[in-house]
Image (tube, rainbow, N blue to C red; front, side, top):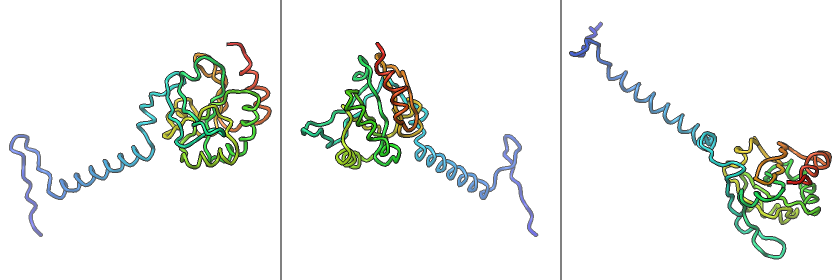
Length: 196
């Protein structure tokens, strides 16, 4: 068997790390950094930790190519659009089964004169356009929440989510999940009809 020779650091008297240990340390550090970067990116942690949006400070761009029946482009919207009146903010996506199932209820609210603002969450704009062309557009404006910043800022963990927004703007009623006729009759319509 060979002898192990330990070198000592002249200043501290501690043994020097071997080349193998240095190489393993570098590989481990690199792999750890790569894993952290993957989680940081895949879980969109910057959006979770550093989200500056709130109900009184957001601006959602319009969905490209989305038009009303008369050919006018459907605008995006911001907190300023919700500030002076009561309205319904509806978070939805074309891929969401619950959103598809309750779309007729949102259409009925719009037909009653409710100003419904749609935040299209993490959806392909082409799919959103196709969905609204097939099923009808109940929205006065549709904004793209591509990275779910507004959704997270409002405390929703998914779509659908419905918020009655009072002047300010401030949230008067929040329904996180699907709505039904009972929720519309007992929570949404009474909140929309309140005085400012």
